[in-house]
Image (cartoon, rainbow, N blue to C red; front, side, top):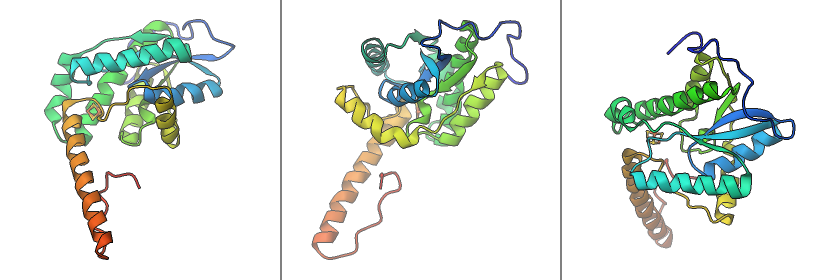
Amino acid sequence: MSGSSPWPDVPLGQAPAEAAGRVPLLLHACCGPCSLEPVKYLREEGFEPTICWTNPNIQPLEEHDRRLEVLKAWAADVAHVEVIVAGDDRDGWERLVAPACFDRKRRCKACYALRLAEGCRVARERGFEYVSTTLAVSPYQLFDACEDALVGLARAWGLTPVWRDFRPHYPESVTDSRELGMYRQNYCGCRFSAAEAAVERHLARDWRKAAKRARSEGREVPPRPDFLPG
Ligand code: SF4
């Protein structure tokens, strides 16, 4: 899909009722914990988010359902945000994303494109003008690739992308979601990310042990692995 909107005749600005004078915005959400700060800060900016759930990347299916239930419970009980459950194109994910396997850059770019395209389709169908994503919270996502996907797809669908750097609020999202007792997953979503996260946990554990031993023996501490937060 490129160029002009595929649905040029559908009027924009007919999304659900504006809350307290705020501007309706469709927010693609990857999970509950990553939704907390975007909803908070987008509201502060004058938007009223409606969440769109479309994450066929999350494996296994039980994990997908668990994350969705966590999101829905928070949206209903705490945030008072509507959640639209959109397409779950698992065949498309296997066809368009999975062949990249452990080539993370290629894989994640394709994964963002698949999910955000569905988010934009729903936004257009429901009459939203503005579209955003919670993927801009986690420092573990490929920020620039995600921005390119959102901006390119939103424009192709005739929408306005609302891209914000929510990463400075990531520590806040960890604290807030823990306080709310929300389930926090330890991998991004796909089976490849689960394997990568497991390897990194082992490497981190080995590094901590080696660093502790080096300190106790007065030796130089080995270099910290890149993926470990400072
Ligand atoms: S790591 Fe996350 S964004 Fe990347 S392909 Fe897997 S699920 Fe998608």
